[in-house]
Length: 368
Image 1 (cartoon, rainbow, N blue to C red):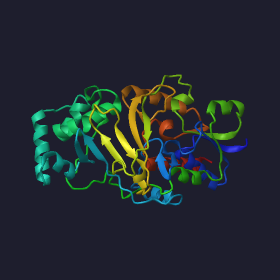
Image 2: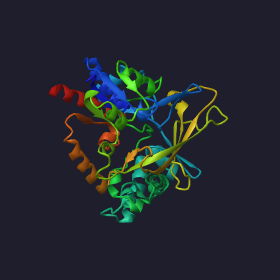
Image 3: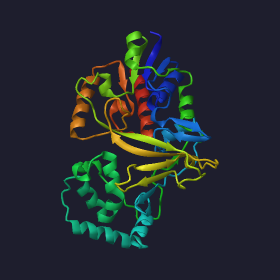
């Protein structure tokens, strides 16, 4: 066998695993069916702007080990995620905070905001929420739900909130401070040179083959490696023999407006159902760009079907049961490590992906 590990997928999980094993003297081959590395965090430089080709990725973490780890491979700026929400002709700050409530109701104090929300919740008399709409209303009241939750969620999931299970929204944080920082993690930022540059450094020392299909490769090279790290769809690994796990997907529509500053913020959400896209990303603002041009991307949620890029797992009861069945099959694959967003059928933040990859390395070392 030429390699110790065949790593399927050049995204964050696979790249971290490759870096760690390469540093331990192991030989790694990384393959990916796409024509580029970095998976969904891939950034491409266009007109001097690092464009997030698969949607906005903002790094944030409370994990000190992970923060120190990424700092070895990239210099992060001090970007703070402070999205804006547009509802009809109204602009609101996110997350829901005193700036949001002040704009919505013309009030100034936390006590006023709490009373308005509490009175709206009392008037609804919802004791046991039966769907996502009732769950959201019981958490934030009528006004916040109608203007900032209902339409956006309908677009995101492709069905009315009354047809979605309540557990999708376990909580909707209400902040009674004038703080627009979306995340509460102590560490947050964007790699100044883009995520692709970070992943390139992680992959140094590993052999990388792009536009390479896993099934085709292992048929031609069945004994290429002692173990496989698989970060593709877990159901695809087993040839969908139990059925397809379901996802939601996203379509991106790029534009280069004739201006140097289109919306004044990196992320602007459109919460009205009649607007077909969920948000517009203006990429230059992630790194405080001063270029004379700009690039924006509109995000359109869409139904997923086989062959379309999977984004968001649909963790309902049916898919959870199917996942458990596939995980049972995976237990029988003693020389395969399943990881990453698709390999575990989880929506991961980037820091959680890195932590999971480091844990997988530690587990490998214990059994070596």
